[in-house]
Structure formats: C-alpha cells, structure tokens
Length: 263
Image (tube, rainbow, N blue to C red):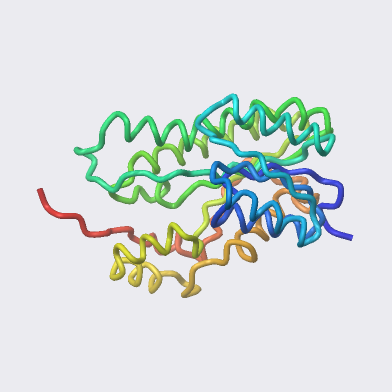
C-alpha cells in the first residue's frame, strides 16, 4: 500500500525537472497526479509515466500565467478524480540574466505573474476542494536565489520570496481547515541547472564545491521524497515551514556569481 493511495495532487510545471520528479515520486506511492504543464509533449510524457509507476495520470495543458487555465486544471482534476488533496506550486518559465539597472518592467511583471500570481491563483482555486476534503497540503517550490539575494535574477528572486510569504500566510489562515502549507527551497540537477552550468561552468563548479554534500539533488528521489513527506500524513503537524533541500548549501551561503560583461 502506497503512502498516497487515494490521494489526488496537482503539480504545476510537471513536464520537466523538479515538477516531473515530484509527479513520479507521488505516482510510486499510488497518488493520482494532474500534470499542469504548458509544454504538450513533456506534459503527456509525465502523465504517462505516472500511470506506468502505479499512479493515475491526467495531463491538462496549462499556462499558469492565465488564471482561467489554472481554474480549468483544478476543475478537470476534481471532475476526473472526484477530489483534491494537494497542490504543488512549481511552474517557472524562464527569466532574464541582467544587472538590476537593466531590468525592464516587463521582466519584473513576468516574474511576478509566473512566480507569485500563479501560486496565488492555484491556492484560491484549490481552497474549496481542500476544505471539502477535510484538509490537505500546499507545497510551494521557492529558491535560495531569493533567500540569499543572488545576482542578476531579481524578478525570480522577488517572485519566489513573495510566494514564500504567501505560502506562510496560507499556513496561518487555513490551518483551521486542516490545510497545511510549506515551502521547499531545492538544489537539483534539472534542465535549468544544466543550462546554467553550460553558461557559467566555473561558477557552477565553485557552487558545487561549497555544497557540504558535494552534489546536486535528484529531482525525484531527493526533492520528490521531501514533497512526499509534506503531502503525506507523516507531516500532519507541520505547517508554515521552509525546508532547504539543498545538501546543506544554505549553510555555506553558496554564491551565484555568473560573469556578465561590464557596461
């Protein structure tokens, strides 16, 4: 018997990276997973993997910058599976690598809409279903980029820190309904990390050297397992927390410092 048998979760941005890893980990524990992903082939692939690994997969093509599409993903989930027990706010769709003085309003608003508003909309859409189920779990993927104020990614940093505050507020307000809300700040070997390593190999190597465990996490087995804990009944008395699932990188204050051309 799986730890999530009978449970239903939505994972945004589950076509790649950490979202995909979480969906796969949940599936191994018998969870029904809605893959809310904008990329059609990637979303279909993950939903098929959920089925193959012992869960029940549903792909709903979802652009999380559109509130109506988030609402539709939640509605489709409840229609297919009859309930909703967990929401994993993971989706991110890129940002710009520029110095702060060169960021545009469009850069910042993109980050806010994707990293903060999408999380807010998903929480609001899920709330009545989580309440009706007698409680549930919200897990928001945030970032050490925001906690440590890494350079050149201010729209990402700001949106992720805002989403962290939002999640902690939900934990406070919705605890009376049995809804728990927690944050994971991960470090994982995702497609985005590999792109960063290709762009800034020296900085990537230096960061890895500062990681006490000496490696980047596995999206499924390292990050997904902690998300599983936060959604399962094992964490029924845990809410409002930020878990740094990063091999200890936050202890050392690992520095993100890719080189950019001088003005």
